[in-house]
Length: 104
Image 1 (spheres, one colour):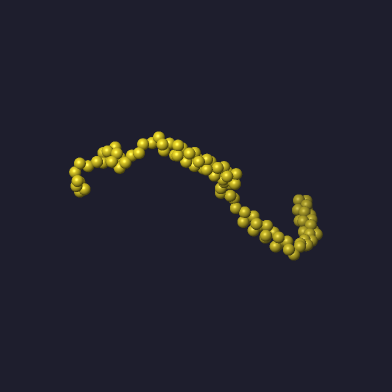
Image 2 (tube, rainbow, N blue to C red):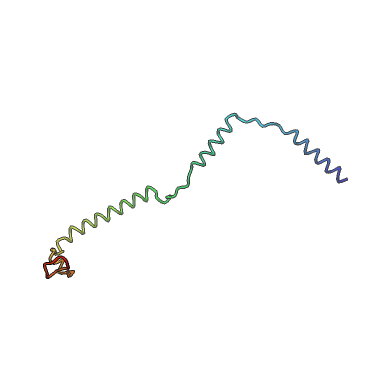
């Protein structure tokens, strides 16, 4: 009894296989699929995804602002600083020599 059921299922399977018809495909289907696959391969994940134009603009503005503040501070504080000469520099760091010999 089991063998008859198995034989019937096998025959039904073969009948189903015989009813399958060839699928009609557009001649350009393969070409379209290959193009889509190549497009997917060409898309690379961005390494610097955080480096957007908005971030770049903000960074440039911050750098310009810091430069402007530095220049403003440099010109305003130049009057307050004292003039040092080479002699005062050498005295400050004990570079002054009492002898005239350079071979010490």
